[in-house]
Length: 187
Image (tube, rainbow, N blue to C red; front, side):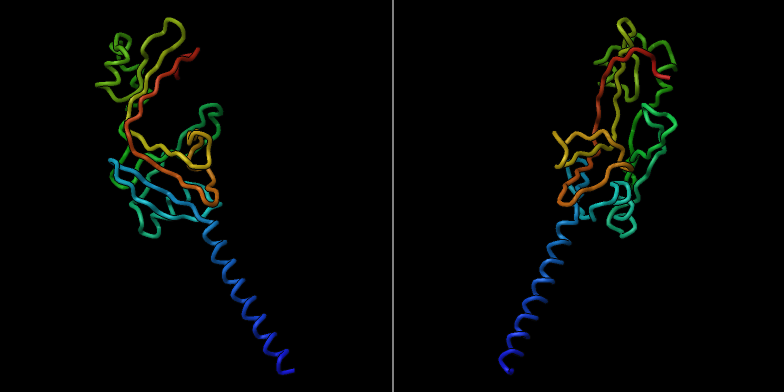
């Protein structure tokens, strides 16, 4: 009987040890690394998986790890009745862009070539309307990539992107240059 109690005690100790190990490993598997990059300097943070990137950034602010994120309510490009929230700043590092009204502000934009727009004028510009409407956008913005998405490219607003366990998300403030042609003019 004495031997049975010792064996039972040993088994209970092993079970307790195993259960603590499983909990510790489960916690690691449920986290995400969020790197915030400004001027080439990376500031790493950890957040729980299963929440949106917007919620994770707001939680990091609530814990005092980052300065306050600023969000702008925007309409969905394909479904204007659907709204999203775009990151426009973290603390005093804010997006520096023009607006779509720059397109219609003066006729001078019709004579602006793409190289000049990119070099000297942040904002949205109509470059030509010969074969569709060719636009260029230049500005300093917040973008993000993920280790779990093909090529790291994401086209989902941070308010709609759910973090997955073990993922690394990199949020970068940098100069963006995009050009495209479409059939109809921007509103």
